[in-house]
Length: 407
Image 1: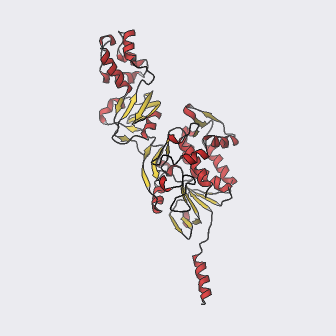
Image 2: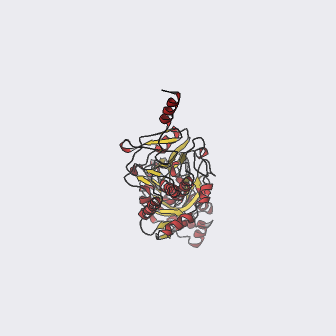
Image 3: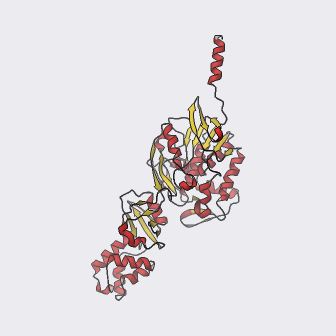
């Protein structure tokens, strides 16, 4: 064989056929959005998911109506060890941008409290919309396609999946989410893949999750089913929403919100009378000296909760027989009742995952890995976690668009 023939043979052996321009792993909110954007830019996109259908978390979200965004979306409503990372993507694809897409598909919607937007009908309308957007870009969607391996060489990512099939592309997007709600098939696959390519991972933990109380708080656990508006605090962060007592501890929107900030061993403070003016108990004594603390609390709280709080405070008899200092102390305790949870209900009940792929290794503009050209990470897989109320979906849309415009 001549030298020229040897060179030609070596060239043929080194050539790896490219099957797509981009492969996206995970057909959830972020993956679907990314695929649609990239496909409509003329990219040949393959979207893979191990589940039997796309958008499974979308379908169950918001009680089946999908809280698809929040009008008050802002970077300060997201948690991350790199707190400014989300700013770029969120500013370039806003809640109003997604709402415009929803309206183009004539999907009826309504606003609930605190800027939360929901479908009037079914969350499946959002999934159908995203699939239609993917179809516009001729995206190839394959479900029931578990990934068996990912390699990188000659400028291409090779993804082995169901039935021994293999796809190759110069761009690979990790959009497989975090381990929250494992019954839906969620795993830590994104973190394993990120580590494989040298990306760091911020320790994942459950977020937007009910908190559990220790045995000594059994009296409060016996209030299971009781809900009331409160102000819940963890550290310097506080939320004015409802708290719900459960047979295991504390839940409800206010608790889910603070759970994302709460660290094991810390206390959670609850103001049971957030609307009350300072000195309200002393004022109640002046106005109704024959009333008991329990009777006064029942006017603002569910009776079962009023019973427990009055018993714990320990002010028996008529308010007229209680000194002003004791009433002030009781008022202070009711305004900052301390619980020390012994844990949470874990990933099984967590709506999202805090932590994830370290954003300090990613471009905030494109979501591409700084040290691994062609590798992208979006959505819940990365260390960006929003508040309750549509913020995490907005991050999925915004990060998906950022990567879809870059691959």
